[in-house]
Length: 65
View: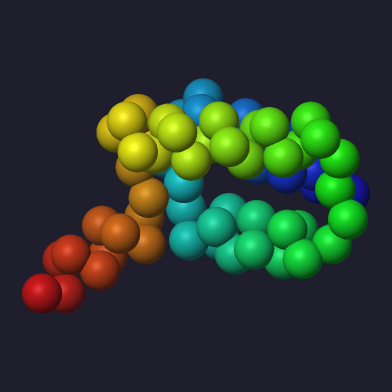
């Protein structure tokens, strides 16, 4: 079973969050998760806001305009 922190780790390592990984996170966040996963998710949010991780969904959204 994948953990939120595993998906986050991959995104932080690559600097990129795919649409598939985003959907995985949405599904995992609907279930029970521990404090380590919550902290990892917050780290991902901060990295995305700082521009350290790009989101494929946002790139797609802006390319359609």
